[in-house]
Length: 180
Image (cartoon, rainbow, N blue to C red; front, side, top):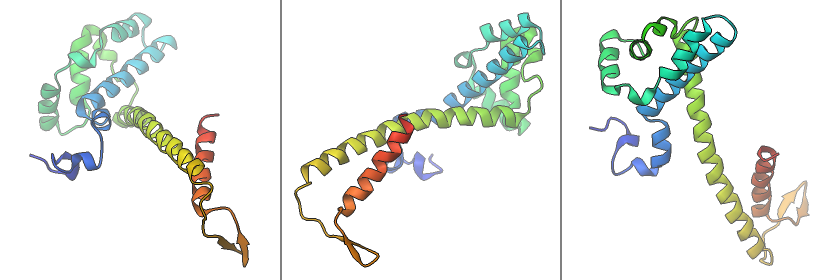
């Protein structure tokens, strides 16, 4: 049963795409959190904070796709903690090296970093879609450059550049910044 408009079968596609929903799914959230825990262990191993062999074991054995999201959710419901059940599942998965999972980190360190990874994934979709819109607007601007457009008053002087083109070139400049 849906509890939010984004989960509605009828309205859900009005506010998102299957691709974007997969990024913000619980499975991808888990995958990003595990990726952060693995990156933390790897970095700590490289800097001697934890034994290198332990870090290598964590990198080798930690695998979010082999964790049971259902079991993690059941444990989280009992523990009332957003990450503890994930940490416990990872510790079991990597064996003795598990005592170094989450070493020196806070829950917010892991959750926030994983969320930023999801935002990064989302941005690539948004950027791709916005570039497509900009290309269509560029075509529209070229196809309509002979049309008569209303002038804009600027400081009581007529300004002959069309309003639509001002808006279009503003967007195109934005993309130029990101594509440098």
